[in-house]
Amino acid sequence: MTILYSLYYELSKRYPHSRITGMKQETESFKTELVIRMLNFTLGKSTFQNGLRKFILNHRYKTFIGDDIWVALSNQAIKDGTLDSGFNISYIAESWISQNRLPLITVNRDYDKGTAKINQKVYLRERPHDVPDKEKMLWWIPIIISRQDTLNLPNYTSKVWMNRTKEINIANLPDKSQFIIINKEEVGPFPVNYDEENWNMLSNFLQTAKGRSAIPTYTRAKLLHDAWNLAYAGDLSFATALNMTLFMKYERNHIVWSPVFTFIDHFGRYIDMSEVHTKFERYTIYFLAPLYEELGPESENEEHCKTEMRKLAKTFLCRAGYPPCIAEAQKSFGMWINESNTDFDRIPKEYICPVFKWGSMEEWKFGLKYVSQFPKSRLRSERTFLLKMLVGCPSEDEKINHLLDLVLLGPNSNFTENDINLILNTLTGGSVGYTSLLKFVVKNWTFIRQRFQTKTNLWDKLISSATGMFATQKGYNMVKDFYDQHVGQFGSAQHIIEKSLRNIKEEAQWSDQNLPVIEKWLETFLSNTISKK
Image (tube, rainbow, N blue to C red; front, side):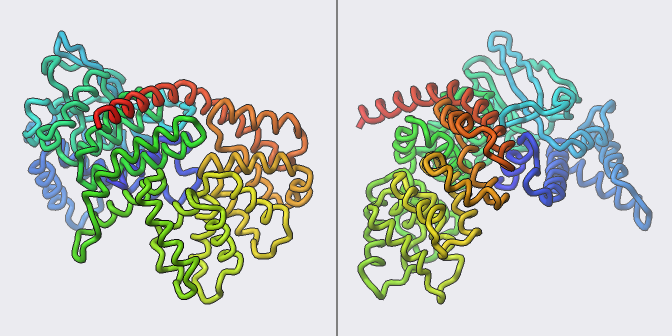
Protein backbone atom coordinates (compact mmCIF):
# COMPACT_ATOMS: atom_id res chain seq x y z
CA MET A 1 0.00 0.00 0.00
CA THR A 2 2.87 2.36 0.76
CA ILE A 3 4.24 1.91 -2.75
CA LEU A 4 0.78 2.23 -4.29
CA TYR A 5 0.09 5.50 -2.47
CA SER A 6 3.49 6.80 -3.58
CA LEU A 7 2.47 5.97 -7.15
CA TYR A 8 -0.81 7.85 -6.72
CA TYR A 9 1.10 10.83 -5.38
CA GLU A 10 3.75 10.93 -8.10
CA LEU A 11 1.43 10.42 -11.08
CA SER A 12 -1.04 13.05 -9.83
CA LYS A 13 1.56 15.83 -10.00
CA ARG A 14 1.55 18.40 -12.78
CA TYR A 15 4.96 17.12 -13.87
CA PRO A 16 5.55 13.51 -12.73
CA HIS A 17 9.17 12.51 -12.09
CA SER A 18 10.36 16.08 -12.66
CA ARG A 19 12.71 15.90 -9.67
CA ILE A 20 13.94 12.32 -9.80
CA THR A 21 13.83 11.11 -13.40
CA GLY A 22 15.43 7.80 -12.41
CA MET A 23 12.18 6.89 -10.65
CA LYS A 24 10.27 6.74 -13.92
CA GLN A 25 11.40 3.24 -14.94
CA GLU A 26 10.68 1.89 -11.46
CA THR A 27 7.23 3.51 -11.50
CA GLU A 28 6.39 2.05 -14.91
CA SER A 29 7.44 -1.42 -13.78
CA PHE A 30 5.35 -1.22 -10.64
CA LYS A 31 2.35 0.10 -12.56
CA THR A 32 2.60 -2.89 -14.95
CA GLU A 33 2.71 -5.20 -11.94
CA LEU A 34 -0.49 -3.58 -10.64
CA VAL A 35 -2.18 -4.04 -14.02
CA ILE A 36 -1.32 -7.77 -13.95
CA ARG A 37 -2.70 -7.94 -10.39
CA MET A 38 -5.89 -6.20 -11.56
CA LEU A 39 -6.34 -8.72 -14.39
CA ASN A 40 -5.79 -11.62 -11.97
CA PHE A 41 -8.71 -10.33 -9.87
CA THR A 42 -11.06 -9.23 -12.64
CA LEU A 43 -10.65 -12.27 -14.90
CA GLY A 44 -10.60 -14.69 -11.99
CA LYS A 45 -7.62 -16.57 -10.57
CA SER A 46 -8.38 -19.79 -12.47
CA THR A 47 -8.74 -18.02 -15.83
CA PHE A 48 -5.58 -16.00 -15.25
CA GLN A 49 -3.48 -19.01 -14.29
CA ASN A 50 -4.80 -21.20 -17.13
CA GLY A 51 -4.21 -18.42 -19.65
CA LEU A 52 -0.59 -18.00 -18.52
CA ARG A 53 0.00 -21.78 -18.55
CA LYS A 54 -1.22 -22.04 -22.14
CA PHE A 55 0.94 -19.09 -23.13
CA ILE A 56 4.03 -20.76 -21.60
CA LEU A 57 3.27 -24.10 -23.28
CA ASN A 58 2.64 -22.50 -26.70
CA HIS A 59 5.76 -20.31 -26.62
CA ARG A 60 8.40 -22.66 -25.26
CA TYR A 61 11.69 -22.11 -27.11
CA LYS A 62 10.06 -19.39 -29.24
CA THR A 63 10.46 -15.66 -29.51
CA PHE A 64 7.44 -13.75 -28.22
CA ILE A 65 6.30 -10.19 -27.65
CA GLY A 66 4.34 -8.71 -24.79
CA ASP A 67 1.11 -8.69 -26.75
CA ASP A 68 1.24 -12.51 -27.00
CA ILE A 69 0.60 -12.69 -23.25
CA TRP A 70 -2.46 -10.45 -23.49
CA VAL A 71 -3.81 -12.50 -26.44
CA ALA A 72 -3.48 -15.73 -24.45
CA LEU A 73 -5.31 -14.19 -21.49
CA SER A 74 -8.05 -12.81 -23.76
CA ASN A 75 -8.65 -16.19 -25.39
CA GLN A 76 -8.86 -17.96 -22.03
CA ALA A 77 -11.15 -15.31 -20.49
CA ILE A 78 -13.56 -15.38 -23.44
CA LYS A 79 -13.58 -19.19 -23.32
CA ASP A 80 -14.32 -19.14 -19.57
CA GLY A 81 -16.94 -16.44 -19.93
CA THR A 82 -15.13 -13.96 -17.63
CA LEU A 83 -14.62 -11.41 -20.44
CA ASP A 84 -17.04 -10.18 -23.08
CA SER A 85 -16.14 -11.57 -26.52
CA GLY A 86 -15.99 -8.02 -27.89
CA PHE A 87 -13.24 -7.04 -25.44
CA ASN A 88 -9.49 -7.45 -25.79
CA ILE A 89 -6.95 -7.64 -22.94
CA SER A 90 -4.36 -5.96 -25.18
CA TYR A 91 -6.46 -2.80 -25.32
CA ILE A 92 -7.18 -2.93 -21.60
CA ALA A 93 -3.50 -3.31 -20.63
CA GLU A 94 -2.30 -0.74 -23.17
CA SER A 95 -4.58 1.96 -21.76
CA TRP A 96 -2.82 1.62 -18.39
CA ILE A 97 0.75 0.97 -19.45
CA SER A 98 1.06 3.60 -22.19
CA GLN A 99 -0.21 6.56 -20.16
CA ASN A 100 1.92 8.23 -17.51
CA ARG A 101 -1.13 8.98 -15.37
CA LEU A 102 -3.86 7.25 -13.38
CA PRO A 103 -7.63 7.75 -13.58
CA LEU A 104 -10.12 8.98 -11.00
CA ILE A 105 -13.70 7.74 -11.17
CA THR A 106 -16.60 9.68 -9.66
CA VAL A 107 -19.86 8.00 -8.70
CA ASN A 108 -23.09 10.00 -8.42
CA ARG A 109 -26.07 7.92 -7.35
CA ASP A 110 -29.74 8.48 -8.05
CA TYR A 111 -31.16 6.92 -4.90
CA ASP A 112 -34.78 7.00 -6.04
CA LYS A 113 -34.09 5.12 -9.27
CA GLY A 114 -31.39 2.81 -7.90
CA THR A 115 -28.93 3.92 -10.58
CA ALA A 116 -25.61 5.77 -10.74
CA LYS A 117 -23.65 7.81 -13.23
CA ILE A 118 -19.93 7.02 -13.29
CA ASN A 119 -17.40 9.41 -14.83
CA GLN A 120 -13.68 9.00 -15.38
CA LYS A 121 -10.99 11.68 -15.71
CA VAL A 122 -7.28 12.09 -15.04
CA TYR A 123 -6.43 12.04 -11.33
CA LEU A 124 -4.65 15.34 -10.56
CA ARG A 125 -3.86 16.26 -7.00
CA GLU A 126 -1.37 19.08 -7.43
CA ARG A 127 -2.79 22.42 -8.52
CA PRO A 128 -3.35 23.94 -11.03
CA HIS A 129 -4.88 21.09 -13.03
CA ASP A 130 -3.68 22.50 -16.36
CA VAL A 131 -2.20 19.28 -17.79
CA PRO A 132 -2.04 19.16 -21.62
CA ASP A 133 -4.39 16.69 -23.36
CA LYS A 134 -5.99 15.62 -20.09
CA GLU A 135 -9.41 15.41 -21.78
CA LYS A 136 -8.05 12.81 -24.20
CA MET A 137 -6.75 10.45 -21.51
CA LEU A 138 -9.14 7.55 -20.95
CA TRP A 139 -8.74 4.04 -19.52
CA TRP A 140 -10.39 0.63 -19.53
CA ILE A 141 -11.56 0.57 -15.90
CA PRO A 142 -13.16 -2.40 -14.12
CA ILE A 143 -16.19 -1.32 -12.11
CA ILE A 144 -16.44 -3.78 -9.22
CA ILE A 145 -19.28 -2.86 -6.88
CA SER A 146 -19.59 -3.99 -3.26
CA ARG A 147 -22.94 -3.35 -1.60
CA GLN A 148 -23.53 -2.82 2.11
CA ASP A 149 -25.71 -5.96 2.24
CA THR A 150 -23.10 -8.19 0.50
CA LEU A 151 -19.80 -6.89 1.91
CA ASN A 152 -18.75 -10.32 3.15
CA LEU A 153 -18.75 -11.84 -0.36
CA PRO A 154 -15.25 -11.94 -1.95
CA ASN A 155 -16.44 -10.74 -5.36
CA TYR A 156 -13.75 -9.19 -7.55
CA THR A 157 -14.93 -10.15 -11.02
CA SER A 158 -15.84 -7.07 -13.00
CA LYS A 159 -19.43 -6.96 -14.21
CA VAL A 160 -18.88 -3.66 -16.05
CA TRP A 161 -15.87 -2.17 -17.85
CA MET A 162 -15.54 1.49 -18.73
CA ASN A 163 -14.12 0.91 -22.19
CA ARG A 164 -12.31 4.21 -22.63
CA THR A 165 -15.55 6.14 -22.30
CA LYS A 166 -15.95 9.21 -20.13
CA GLU A 167 -19.29 8.19 -18.65
CA ILE A 168 -21.45 5.13 -18.10
CA ASN A 169 -24.69 4.46 -16.24
CA ILE A 170 -25.30 1.47 -14.00
CA ALA A 171 -28.53 0.14 -12.55
CA ASN A 172 -29.82 -2.30 -9.92
CA LEU A 173 -28.14 -0.54 -7.00
CA PRO A 174 -29.43 -0.80 -3.40
CA ASP A 175 -31.86 1.72 -1.94
CA LYS A 176 -30.99 4.98 -0.20
CA SER A 177 -30.34 3.28 3.14
CA GLN A 178 -27.27 1.38 1.84
CA PHE A 179 -23.87 2.55 0.61
CA ILE A 180 -21.76 1.06 -2.17
CA ILE A 181 -17.98 0.70 -2.44
CA ILE A 182 -16.20 0.57 -5.78
CA ASN A 183 -12.71 -0.86 -6.21
CA LYS A 184 -12.65 -2.69 -2.88
CA GLU A 185 -9.15 -3.70 -1.76
CA GLU A 186 -7.59 -1.55 -4.52
CA VAL A 187 -8.25 -4.16 -7.24
CA GLY A 188 -7.28 -1.49 -9.77
CA PRO A 189 -4.85 1.40 -9.18
CA PHE A 190 -7.34 4.27 -9.12
CA PRO A 191 -9.04 6.41 -6.44
CA VAL A 192 -12.84 6.65 -6.23
CA ASN A 193 -15.07 9.59 -5.34
CA TYR A 194 -18.74 9.35 -4.33
CA ASP A 195 -21.65 11.70 -3.82
CA GLU A 196 -21.88 13.23 -0.33
CA GLU A 197 -24.68 10.92 0.81
CA ASN A 198 -22.70 7.77 0.04
CA TRP A 199 -19.63 9.18 1.83
CA ASN A 200 -21.73 10.00 4.89
CA MET A 201 -23.19 6.49 5.02
CA LEU A 202 -19.66 5.06 4.86
CA SER A 203 -18.50 7.36 7.68
CA ASN A 204 -21.41 6.40 9.93
CA PHE A 205 -21.00 2.67 9.20
CA LEU A 206 -17.27 2.76 10.04
CA GLN A 207 -18.01 4.30 13.43
CA THR A 208 -19.72 1.07 14.48
CA ALA A 209 -17.83 -2.06 15.57
CA LYS A 210 -19.84 -4.13 13.10
CA GLY A 211 -18.96 -1.76 10.28
CA ARG A 212 -15.23 -1.76 10.95
CA SER A 213 -15.15 -5.55 10.99
CA ALA A 214 -17.27 -5.82 7.82
CA ILE A 215 -15.11 -3.53 5.65
CA PRO A 216 -11.71 -5.15 4.92
CA THR A 217 -8.49 -3.55 6.15
CA TYR A 218 -7.14 -2.34 2.81
CA THR A 219 -10.55 -0.95 1.91
CA ARG A 220 -10.75 1.06 5.16
CA ALA A 221 -7.31 2.45 4.36
CA LYS A 222 -8.37 3.21 0.79
CA LEU A 223 -11.51 5.08 1.85
CA LEU A 224 -9.45 7.31 4.15
CA HIS A 225 -6.68 7.82 1.62
CA ASP A 226 -9.06 8.62 -1.24
CA ALA A 227 -11.21 11.02 0.79
CA TRP A 228 -8.28 13.09 2.01
CA ASN A 229 -6.43 13.29 -1.26
CA LEU A 230 -9.59 14.10 -3.21
CA ALA A 231 -10.33 16.92 -0.76
CA TYR A 232 -6.80 18.23 -1.15
CA ALA A 233 -7.21 18.10 -4.95
CA GLY A 234 -10.47 20.07 -4.75
CA ASP A 235 -12.77 17.20 -5.75
CA LEU A 236 -14.36 16.67 -2.32
CA SER A 237 -15.40 18.87 0.61
CA PHE A 238 -12.96 18.84 3.51
CA ALA A 239 -15.93 18.49 5.87
CA THR A 240 -16.68 15.13 4.23
CA ALA A 241 -13.02 14.08 4.37
CA LEU A 242 -12.82 15.00 8.07
CA ASN A 243 -15.99 12.99 8.75
CA MET A 244 -14.19 9.97 7.29
CA THR A 245 -11.58 10.18 10.07
CA LEU A 246 -14.06 9.90 12.95
CA PHE A 247 -13.80 6.11 13.15
CA MET A 248 -10.03 6.36 13.76
CA LYS A 249 -10.78 6.87 17.46
CA TYR A 250 -11.52 3.12 17.52
CA GLU A 251 -9.21 1.89 14.72
CA ARG A 252 -6.10 -0.02 15.79
CA ASN A 253 -4.81 -1.59 12.56
CA HIS A 254 -1.44 -0.18 11.52
CA ILE A 255 -2.29 -0.48 7.80
CA VAL A 256 -5.29 1.83 8.21
CA TRP A 257 -3.28 4.26 10.34
CA SER A 258 -0.48 4.50 7.77
CA PRO A 259 -2.20 7.00 5.41
CA VAL A 260 -3.46 8.96 8.44
CA PHE A 261 0.05 9.68 9.69
CA THR A 262 0.96 10.87 6.19
CA PHE A 263 -2.07 13.13 6.03
CA ILE A 264 -1.41 14.62 9.51
CA ASP A 265 2.14 15.42 8.48
CA HIS A 266 1.36 16.87 5.05
CA PHE A 267 -1.81 18.70 5.93
CA GLY A 268 -0.44 19.97 9.24
CA ARG A 269 2.47 21.59 7.44
CA TYR A 270 0.21 23.00 4.76
CA ILE A 271 -2.11 24.87 7.15
CA ASP A 272 0.76 25.75 9.48
CA MET A 273 0.52 29.45 8.70
CA SER A 274 -3.23 29.75 9.28
CA GLU A 275 -5.22 30.27 12.46
CA VAL A 276 -6.71 26.81 11.94
CA HIS A 277 -3.48 25.06 12.89
CA THR A 278 -3.93 25.21 16.68
CA LYS A 279 -7.37 23.60 16.37
CA PHE A 280 -5.92 20.95 14.07
CA GLU A 281 -3.30 20.10 16.71
CA ARG A 282 -6.04 19.60 19.34
CA TYR A 283 -7.89 17.35 16.89
CA THR A 284 -4.66 15.35 16.32
CA ILE A 285 -4.18 14.84 20.08
CA TYR A 286 -7.81 13.71 20.45
CA PHE A 287 -7.28 10.79 18.05
CA LEU A 288 -3.67 9.88 18.76
CA ALA A 289 -3.58 10.04 22.57
CA PRO A 290 -5.90 7.02 23.11
CA LEU A 291 -3.93 5.02 20.53
CA TYR A 292 -0.60 5.87 22.15
CA GLU A 293 -1.81 5.18 25.69
CA GLU A 294 -3.36 1.88 24.64
CA LEU A 295 -0.13 0.75 22.96
CA GLY A 296 1.64 1.21 26.30
CA PRO A 297 5.38 0.72 26.87
CA GLU A 298 7.40 -1.28 24.38
CA SER A 299 7.63 -5.01 25.10
CA GLU A 300 10.57 -7.24 24.27
CA ASN A 301 9.13 -9.40 21.49
CA GLU A 302 6.35 -7.23 20.11
CA GLU A 303 5.57 -6.99 16.39
CA HIS A 304 7.53 -4.46 14.35
CA CYS A 305 4.32 -2.78 13.14
CA LYS A 306 3.28 -2.08 16.74
CA THR A 307 6.68 -0.53 17.51
CA GLU A 308 6.45 1.69 14.42
CA MET A 309 2.89 2.76 15.21
CA ARG A 310 3.89 3.75 18.77
CA LYS A 311 6.88 5.68 17.44
CA LEU A 312 4.77 7.58 14.89
CA ALA A 313 2.02 8.30 17.41
CA LYS A 314 4.57 9.68 19.88
CA THR A 315 6.25 11.80 17.18
CA PHE A 316 3.01 13.46 16.09
CA LEU A 317 1.72 13.87 19.64
CA CYS A 318 4.94 15.61 20.61
CA ARG A 319 4.72 17.80 17.53
CA ALA A 320 1.14 18.75 18.45
CA GLY A 321 2.15 19.70 22.01
CA TYR A 322 0.80 16.73 23.97
CA PRO A 323 1.78 17.71 27.57
CA PRO A 324 2.98 14.26 28.84
CA CYS A 325 5.21 13.96 25.79
CA ILE A 326 6.72 17.43 26.19
CA ALA A 327 7.44 16.80 29.89
CA GLU A 328 9.08 13.46 29.11
CA ALA A 329 11.13 15.01 26.31
CA GLN A 330 12.39 17.89 28.47
CA LYS A 331 13.30 15.50 31.28
CA SER A 332 15.38 13.38 28.89
CA PHE A 333 16.96 16.46 27.31
CA GLY A 334 17.76 17.88 30.75
CA MET A 335 19.90 14.83 31.50
CA TRP A 336 21.99 15.63 28.42
CA ILE A 337 22.43 19.27 29.47
CA ASN A 338 23.13 18.70 33.17
CA GLU A 339 25.06 15.42 33.21
CA SER A 340 28.43 15.63 31.49
CA ASN A 341 28.65 11.85 31.07
CA THR A 342 25.32 11.57 29.22
CA ASP A 343 25.83 10.90 25.51
CA PHE A 344 23.61 12.44 22.85
CA ASP A 345 22.60 9.03 21.51
CA ARG A 346 20.96 8.15 24.85
CA ILE A 347 18.19 10.66 24.10
CA PRO A 348 15.34 9.15 22.08
CA LYS A 349 15.35 10.80 18.64
CA GLU A 350 11.63 11.60 18.81
CA TYR A 351 12.30 13.87 21.83
CA ILE A 352 14.70 16.25 20.09
CA CYS A 353 12.14 18.06 17.94
CA PRO A 354 9.55 18.74 20.68
CA VAL A 355 12.21 20.22 22.95
CA PHE A 356 13.44 22.53 20.19
CA LYS A 357 9.83 23.43 19.34
CA TRP A 358 8.21 23.81 22.75
CA GLY A 359 11.23 24.17 25.01
CA SER A 360 13.16 27.22 26.19
CA MET A 361 15.64 29.35 24.25
CA GLU A 362 18.32 28.01 26.59
CA GLU A 363 17.60 24.42 25.56
CA TRP A 364 17.62 25.37 21.89
CA LYS A 365 20.93 27.26 22.22
CA PHE A 366 22.48 24.23 23.93
CA GLY A 367 21.67 22.18 20.82
CA LEU A 368 23.08 24.92 18.56
CA LYS A 369 26.31 25.04 20.56
CA TYR A 370 26.66 21.26 20.28
CA VAL A 371 26.28 21.49 16.49
CA SER A 372 28.75 24.41 16.25
CA GLN A 373 31.35 22.50 18.29
CA PHE A 374 30.40 19.06 17.05
CA PRO A 375 32.76 16.35 18.38
CA LYS A 376 34.91 14.81 15.65
CA SER A 377 34.42 11.42 17.26
CA ARG A 378 30.70 11.43 16.43
CA LEU A 379 29.08 10.49 13.12
CA ARG A 380 28.43 13.41 10.76
CA SER A 381 24.91 12.10 10.17
CA GLU A 382 24.17 12.94 13.83
CA ARG A 383 25.17 16.55 13.23
CA THR A 384 22.98 16.70 10.12
CA PHE A 385 20.02 15.32 12.08
CA LEU A 386 20.50 17.80 14.94
CA LEU A 387 20.89 20.74 12.56
CA LYS A 388 17.66 19.82 10.78
CA MET A 389 15.85 19.63 14.13
CA LEU A 390 17.25 23.00 15.22
CA VAL A 391 16.04 24.63 12.02
CA GLY A 392 12.80 22.81 11.28
CA CYS A 393 11.20 22.41 14.71
CA PRO A 394 11.05 25.82 16.48
CA SER A 395 7.66 27.53 16.72
CA GLU A 396 9.17 30.94 17.62
CA ASP A 397 10.88 33.18 15.09
CA GLU A 398 13.39 34.27 17.79
CA LYS A 399 15.24 30.96 17.43
CA ILE A 400 15.22 31.09 13.62
CA ASN A 401 16.46 34.69 13.57
CA HIS A 402 19.32 33.83 15.93
CA LEU A 403 20.45 31.04 13.59
CA LEU A 404 20.09 33.19 10.44
CA ASP A 405 22.19 35.91 12.07
CA LEU A 406 25.00 33.41 12.49
CA VAL A 407 24.67 31.71 9.12
CA LEU A 408 23.77 34.50 6.69
CA LEU A 409 25.35 37.57 8.32
CA GLY A 410 28.18 36.34 10.51
CA PRO A 411 31.60 35.14 9.35
CA ASN A 412 31.00 31.79 11.05
CA SER A 413 33.22 29.10 9.59
CA ASN A 414 31.31 26.38 11.44
CA PHE A 415 28.60 26.50 8.74
CA THR A 416 29.56 25.46 5.21
CA GLU A 417 27.66 26.13 1.99
CA ASN A 418 26.24 22.62 2.28
CA ASP A 419 24.99 23.54 5.76
CA ILE A 420 23.35 26.69 4.39
CA ASN A 421 21.64 24.66 1.65
CA LEU A 422 20.40 22.21 4.26
CA ILE A 423 19.13 25.05 6.47
CA LEU A 424 17.29 26.73 3.59
CA ASN A 425 15.71 23.44 2.55
CA THR A 426 14.60 22.69 6.10
CA LEU A 427 13.09 26.16 6.62
CA THR A 428 10.59 25.46 3.84
CA GLY A 429 9.02 22.71 5.98
CA GLY A 430 6.97 25.05 8.20
CA SER A 431 5.49 28.55 8.13
CA VAL A 432 7.60 29.82 11.03
CA GLY A 433 10.69 28.88 9.05
CA TYR A 434 9.93 30.35 5.64
CA THR A 435 8.09 33.39 7.05
CA SER A 436 11.03 34.22 9.35
CA LEU A 437 13.42 33.72 6.43
CA LEU A 438 11.53 36.12 4.16
CA LYS A 439 11.34 38.80 6.88
CA PHE A 440 15.04 38.33 7.58
CA VAL A 441 15.97 38.69 3.90
CA VAL A 442 13.78 41.81 3.56
CA LYS A 443 15.41 43.39 6.62
CA ASN A 444 18.99 42.59 5.57
CA TRP A 445 18.53 42.75 1.78
CA THR A 446 21.54 44.85 0.85
CA PHE A 447 24.09 42.79 2.77
CA ILE A 448 22.60 39.41 1.82
CA ARG A 449 22.42 40.38 -1.87
CA GLN A 450 26.06 41.50 -1.92
CA ARG A 451 27.20 38.35 -0.16
CA PHE A 452 25.26 35.68 -2.02
CA GLN A 453 24.09 36.88 -5.45
CA THR A 454 27.29 35.82 -7.21
CA LYS A 455 26.91 32.31 -5.77
CA THR A 456 24.11 31.48 -8.19
CA ASN A 457 23.00 28.11 -6.83
CA LEU A 458 22.91 29.33 -3.24
CA TRP A 459 21.24 32.60 -4.23
CA ASP A 460 18.51 30.84 -6.20
CA LYS A 461 17.91 28.45 -3.31
CA LEU A 462 17.68 31.39 -0.88
CA ILE A 463 15.04 33.24 -2.93
CA SER A 464 13.12 30.03 -3.62
CA SER A 465 13.05 29.05 0.07
CA ALA A 466 12.04 32.56 1.18
CA THR A 467 9.17 32.94 -1.28
CA GLY A 468 8.05 29.57 -2.63
CA MET A 469 6.01 27.96 0.16
CA PHE A 470 3.32 30.53 1.04
CA ALA A 471 -0.27 29.44 0.43
CA THR A 472 -2.53 32.28 1.62
CA GLN A 473 -3.46 35.79 0.47
CA LYS A 474 -1.47 37.20 3.39
CA GLY A 475 1.59 35.28 2.20
CA TYR A 476 1.03 36.47 -1.37
CA ASN A 477 0.94 40.09 -0.17
CA MET A 478 4.23 39.64 1.72
CA VAL A 479 6.04 38.18 -1.31
CA LYS A 480 4.49 40.74 -3.70
CA ASP A 481 5.63 43.63 -1.49
CA PHE A 482 9.14 42.15 -1.42
CA TYR A 483 9.10 41.76 -5.21
CA ASP A 484 7.84 45.32 -5.82
CA GLN A 485 10.49 46.83 -3.54
CA HIS A 486 13.37 45.12 -5.32
CA VAL A 487 12.13 44.42 -8.83
CA GLY A 488 15.05 44.06 -11.22
CA GLN A 489 17.49 43.21 -8.42
CA PHE A 490 16.96 39.44 -8.23
CA GLY A 491 19.39 38.46 -10.99
CA SER A 492 19.34 34.72 -11.72
CA ALA A 493 16.43 34.29 -9.27
CA GLN A 494 14.09 36.70 -11.09
CA HIS A 495 12.11 33.85 -12.71
CA ILE A 496 12.01 32.02 -9.36
CA ILE A 497 10.20 34.74 -7.44
CA GLU A 498 7.85 35.35 -10.38
CA LYS A 499 6.98 31.64 -10.40
CA SER A 500 6.47 31.77 -6.62
CA LEU A 501 3.95 34.59 -7.03
CA ARG A 502 1.98 32.63 -9.65
CA ASN A 503 1.90 29.50 -7.47
CA ILE A 504 0.95 31.37 -4.29
CA LYS A 505 -1.94 33.04 -6.09
CA GLU A 506 -3.26 29.60 -7.05
CA GLU A 507 -2.76 28.19 -3.52
CA ALA A 508 -4.35 31.26 -1.93
CA GLN A 509 -7.56 30.59 -3.86
CA TRP A 510 -7.55 27.05 -2.47
CA SER A 511 -6.97 28.34 1.07
CA ASP A 512 -9.74 30.95 0.79
CA GLN A 513 -12.14 28.24 -0.33
CA ASN A 514 -11.17 25.43 2.06
CA LEU A 515 -9.78 26.86 5.30
CA PRO A 516 -13.15 28.29 6.47
CA VAL A 517 -14.75 24.86 5.90
CA ILE A 518 -11.98 23.13 7.84
CA GLU A 519 -12.11 25.65 10.68
CA LYS A 520 -15.89 25.39 11.02
CA TRP A 521 -15.73 21.58 11.13
CA LEU A 522 -12.93 21.59 13.72
CA GLU A 523 -14.72 24.13 15.91
CA THR A 524 -17.92 22.06 15.88
CA PHE A 525 -16.03 18.83 16.49
CA LEU A 526 -13.95 20.21 19.37
CA SER A 527 -16.89 21.93 21.07
CA ASN A 528 -18.97 18.74 20.85
CA THR A 529 -16.08 16.61 22.06
CA ILE A 530 -15.31 18.88 25.03
CA SER A 531 -18.98 19.22 26.01
CA LYS A 532 -19.36 15.42 26.12
CA LYS A 533 -16.43 14.98 28.52
